[in-house]
Length: 156
Image (cartoon, rainbow, N blue to C red; front, side, top):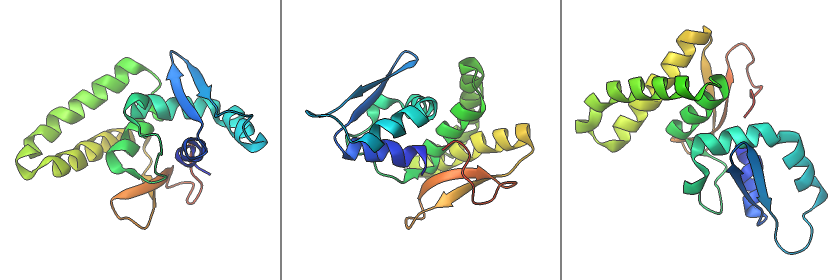
């Protein structure tokens, strides 16, 4: 199960998860949460924090879809592969400058190019191909992995 799926399951069960500094804040509905929910939170806490930081938790809807866009996925991968926030911003901003030339094609095209620029930079720095886990919607994805480990999601 990917981190996005875990967050989606938590949200769908009425559990609110957010990041406060470097800690995870969890609010459960009245009554105690199911045992497996507590275990998922404990087991995946660092990954959940990384994903929520990457997606900017304040902007997430209460019911999170399992599938995410290519740009959201690029943010998650950037946060997981580059722990230094200053370096993350540098990569994001340089990728954004390149993508701005695509604004005249529309916002969706620009977001697609921005995601591609970020992923291209990360692929060059690691020497590995980043692959997406597809969903029924060709514009949304369920996770990612490196080509050296096909089928095995890496910290998603």
